[in-house]
Length: 229
Image (cartoon, rainbow, N blue to C red; front, side, top):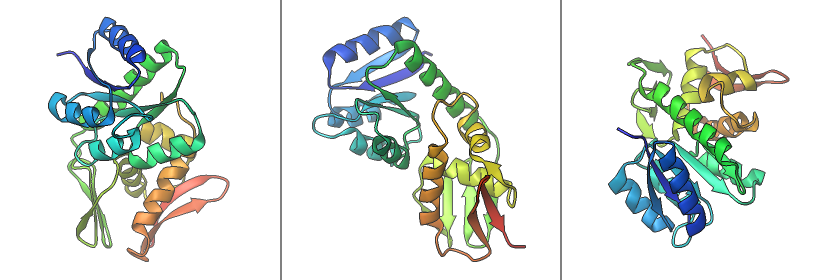
């Protein structure tokens, strides 16, 4: 079966360009022209990846991303005309997997799509059934589930993957580049600020849960999950 892409863009010319290009590359492509339609089509169409514009009528890209992440960890690549750090930080916090800035090169976009799909498939096909447990915390990568004090906590997929990786290698320090390699994949095209954003959001969720472990910054090096044994 062909990989399915949902394109949510309000500009009909860009929509047609993306549809024709990626159909030529062997993908099955569905397009939506506003945010509400995008959410509806995602539920009906069950795509393998979403290309999501930020500036959309009815529901903007941020809201669409939030609603998709409530029920799915499928990859989302956001399209922005601004390219500002604020857009990228907010998108990452909401669970986006990557960003492209208009005007974009189609070959670069194609490479980003392939890279994100490879990373998703690698994580999705893992048979790791172990749950990492420390005081007041359980992390299941297979279920993409985080429990704090026995209660499930909403968490974007990449935050959980980062936490799982650090916790499974507790007391070991990793640089930002190492974390990008291990969690996002060696072909990730973003920058190291991605790691900082995810660590910041994780700390907000984990604050006050236990004094036996914590996410620590090792200045000049990177981060570690510190466990006091």
